[in-house]
Structures are given as structure tokens and as C-alpha cells.
Length: 262
Ligand code: URA
Image (cartoon, rainbow, N blue to C red):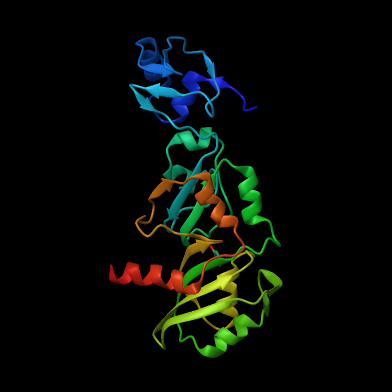
């Protein structure tokens, strides 16, 4: 059976006001539980089964929080940092108090899809190596990509650089535009080694000048979210990020085209 929690904590976690404002609302009879007006702020309820209303509005409460963030550049993927702004600083304090953390890491200059959640089990399913969850990134490079780059990525490549050595699994490259002045492409990888995409392109002599994650598993970045914007997701929507079936490159390409034409 689900655990109970204090009524005022539930309302506060839903962002309905400061603790003091919520206590006042309860004392003034604005809150009902299972049809009965409640004036006891310390009353315990079970949010999953008790029907709680505030000023008549039915409140739906999930103990877990799931956020889709379109991470902007120049922001660290970390819970806290003394010097730089972090992804947690982009959300209201509620999410920190509910122990939300980023599911995985994007480099400071990388943009795009980042899930922030209190659901440790989902984080584990998304980031554990060997789960084969695919990730699709939009990439811009400063050189001319060719079909040979696609072949090299597809067959898997051993990377030796100043960060060490690893063998990247086969990856799928879709070139959108290529010229000596720079190229635009999508890449799908199924692992998340340190600076993986940048190192793979560097191994082909290409410098990544823009990197944005647009898909994780079967979860696509919501095209309506501007950089820095976020929205809540349901548990079901967030769980798509751990789905190894992934989504097709065509759907990912449609998202990019929508952005450039829409
Ligand atoms: N690969 C990178 O090089 N950087 C990221 O942020 C994500 C994938």
C-alpha cells in the first residue's frame, strides 16, 4: 500500500504556494479530502488514492517528478556548482527539494533533450551501460562530411586521443547538408562515453561546432520548447527514454526540418 504524507506537504510539492499560504488556505476551508472540508494542516493523506481538491479543483499528484528540459548551451549538467549555472538552476526550487537529478550528462556547450527526475529507477534504466538505449544528436561540423564518414561510424571505430582509448559501437550517420564550409548531420549512438560524439567526429578530422540531443530511446525533444524551456512529463512519457526500440532517423530528421522551416 502507498505511503501517506502530510496534506500541506502535498500541496506545497504541487507548487500551490508557500507553506504559510497553504496553511492559510487549509485553515480557511479551501481544501477537501474525499469530499470533506479539512482544516487540519497536519492531516495525513495517500495522494494516489485520496481525492484532494483545492477550491473545488481536483489535484492529481505523482510522487515522482519527470521534467523534459531543452538544455541551453553554457549551463552545466550538475545538481550544483559554485561557479556556473546548472540545469537545476533553470527549474523552480521544488524540483531540488523533491530530489530530482539529471538522467545522464550533456557537455556544458551541448544543447537539447535532458530528463530531470526524482525517479532513480528510471535514471538507472536510461544511463546504465549495456542497455542499448539509442540517442540521436544533431551535429554541425566545420568540415565536409562524406559517405566514408558514415561507413567509418557504422563499422565501429577505435578512438585514441588525449582522453584515452575506446572502441565505439557502430553508429548511424545521416548527412543533411555537407560543404567545405561546414556540414549538418544527425548521428545515432547507443552508448554515452565521455565526449563521445565530439571524439568520434574528431577521429574523422571534423570539429563539432554545435551539438544538440534530440532523442533518447523513443522520446523526442518537444519542438515547442525553446532552449532553457521545460515541461513536466507523465511517467509513461518519460519511460519512453529507456525504450531500446528507439525512433527512426526519419522522425528525428522531421523534427529538425520543422525547426528550420516552421
Ligand atoms: N557527446 C558529446 O561529445 N557531448 C555530449 O554532450 C553528448 C554526447
